[in-house]
Amino acid sequence: GASNIAPYIATERASWRSPNDILSILMLVGGDIVQRAVAQLSGSGPWYCAPVAFSFGWLAYSVSALTSSLGDRRLMPPPDFAAKVANADSGYVRDNASWALGRLLRDHEKRMVKQEKNTIALTIAFYRTRRDDPCAGIPKRDWVYWTGVATILLQLGIAIVPGAWHGNWIVLIWYEEKYAARKLDKKKSREVACITRGNGSVFVMVVDSSIGSLRLEDLAAGRDRRRTTMLVVSAIFTVLWIVLLLTVEGVDNNGDVWFLLTIGGLGEVQNVVAAGAARAAEALGFHYEPMQEGDIIAETKVMKALEKAEKKQAGVGLCLLPLFFPGDLRDDEKLFWGGMRESKATR
Image 1 (tube, rainbow, N blue to C red):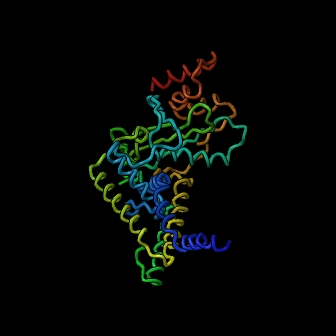
Image 2: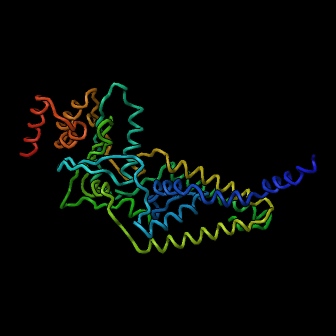
């Protein structure tokens, strides 16, 4: 009868009034989203601030960061978009280990897909970095950055409400690893690197870097920049997040937990957007000159595109050839590429 279900209704009513247990569980999930969001926004000025809002996954992320600090001491996540980086001068090809380069190619492909026709077999885009650019490796603040700032301010505003209403005020190092690369200088003043997913992909980025720019080969190699302080800072933050989790359990049942859920929910949305949003190259820390006529080669035949790319920039087609054509070539193709190799060797 009604008397039998009354206790369950009362329990559910109490849970909805103050869902402390649910909030505690949510604090333990979503760490991977937070990691990717911080990776996206780290290095942005001023003071290399990363405006990643508070969300439910921060505790899980802090524990994961502490584990990494004790192990490989890397905070950046591995690339989530496979790519290969080929040096047009040496012809050396390496698998990309840089989160930033992977996102650079991913977002480039997203933009190009909207422009290209289905009949195009390969598109090769040429970019030139700004010479002596002081902003090399410093992301430009875009809408993703400012969305994070706005979300944090909104969260602070919501956090004030319980304090004013109930008198409850409880609610209230990445850069160096992300851009771990040497810069081009007078000793090595130029680097031409090709970024692509390889055989089967229809897009290639060719980046002509000059003095002051980051060496893309260094980035792709995932150079090691370890600091002992990272372990200490990670441990401190882990302890603080655990303290927050325990504090959440002590929030009274005035309904203030809903304010925390609202704050965490807003932060979760911001984290998801920041982690997955496509961004311009400048927002990723790569600053290029405006493209000129002829900087985009789009052909219905892959071989034709590679031949044109080699004529435009020596070494580009040659370093991409084994990626897209790992097998034997036809006689006329062997003749053409043999001539290109001889021409490059004499320069």
